[in-house]
Amino acid sequence: MAPNLHSSKPSPTNGQVAGKLEHVIYTILYVLPFYLHPTTRPSPTLSRDAPSVIRARIRFVTISVTLATIATIFVLARGANASRLDILRLLGWYPVGVVEIAQCLLLTVLLFAGPVFERAVIEDRWKDWVRGQALHESLSSWIGWRNYVAGPVSEEILFRSLLVPLHLLTPLSPNRVILLTPLYFGIAHVHHFYEFVLTHPHTPLAPSIIRSLIQFTYTTIFGWYATFVFIRSGNVVTVILAHAFCNWAGLPRLWGRVEPRVAIGGPATRGKEDSGSELGEERKGSWSWTIAYYFVLVAGVVAFQQLFWSLTESPRALAQVE
Image (cartoon, rainbow, N blue to C red; front, side, top):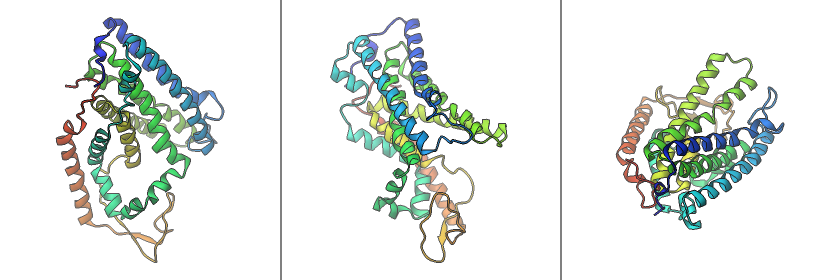
């Protein structure tokens, strides 16, 4: 059981100011290097998805997270009088709770049961998953490596593993920590608006703003969920895997008819940019698949709601969440 972070608290005003200042500093430390160096700075002719940009950003983010980790360990050692083992527990690094990881990942999959069903069954990709082909393809590009490894690991370590324990040191209740800290996580993604406008100069401003607002909303909601799971499980691996899975799943389909692709003219390997006509495929709508998809989607959401508390419960919880 992790030590009680609320046993050594600063005064309410100083503690809240310190917590906010730490979050602002860490957020700036994470985002600012993207624009200070020419190898990480996007331009009208250089996308954030360019391999050279991704590699450079991963290097800078690694440095930023390392510096933030050193600072956090120092604060926990001095401010909470925590031992080395206690610090590892507070950061969610040790022990590695396999049960907590499996339960929280299952809970996340239930929330996205519809998209999983669509890809695995309707689009018949489950065979690629079993063979490991889909995983290999996802991680064989720098974009995939960023989306499913570097991004989830660095963001969850910084915004959950490092900042949440620091905020639990303040007079803020665990519930308020869950509510407030993900706002910084959402703000950290607002800079994508500038990048999008810069690399898509012909796109009207209104759709660009709407796109950024949707991204801010989605990342903030995920931040609430991830912070809740992290505090309840006391395990950073749970939120890293949940983050990677959500990046893979994307936003669930909430309307429209599900249209499975049916190959004609022999098998073909479908690339990300390929169209159905290029592959000799035609879209064949099916109301039965559509009904099945939305049934699985709703059933997954209901199961998620019913199991929300039980699957996140752990004796390693960092604090009591009400």
